[in-house]
Length: 247
Image (cartoon, rainbow, N blue to C red; front, side, top):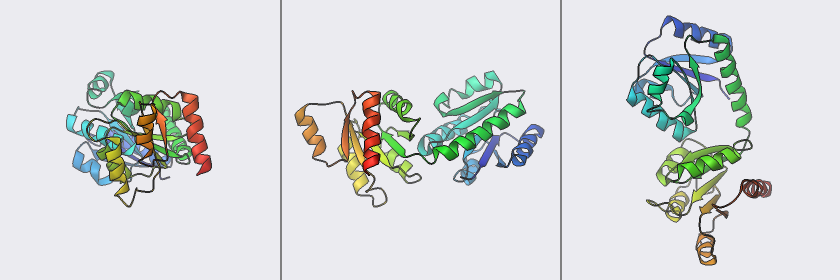
């Protein structure tokens, strides 16, 4: 995995230049980008870690980074003062933040965090990847917290977002909510099956209904399996572990 780090800021200040030099000395390919969406886009595909050096709050940029992190399962380190950070959190949820560093920056702590991030990412890349598709964000976060020690877990809240995510990332399994309100799970599964690039990814339905008639309807769509949303952590782990053993 390439150690590519993008520092985003208002300008390439003396402090930012110092950061870039220290990161490069540590073997990290670090580069600076002004906090404009069009500039971030130019190198976003090759960037593994974003570092936002807060000088001013630009909502458009923060919202873009939030959506980018959601779609590509990435996080951001933030450098700034507590007031700037609190303002940024109005647009960039804490779930998107890898770590916050208050100014004045403790360089050794920052470099250690970056090194740990890339080490963890290399280990993480070896794990199986599970994509959860569900309109209930709180439920997805619970499932992610249960699985993240043993699997890479990405989350999206609609079928369209899932297809967008899968265009840029690979998944070994999709956990798909059966009862989503706008585009239902069965309809999303049809969308997956019509796309040659993702049609062979196994899908398990997440369903809140455990009665026989509901399960029969779920199984008629021929998913890899189904999981009741009342499942406990241990049972879920056992089911997924056994699935991957049998693949």
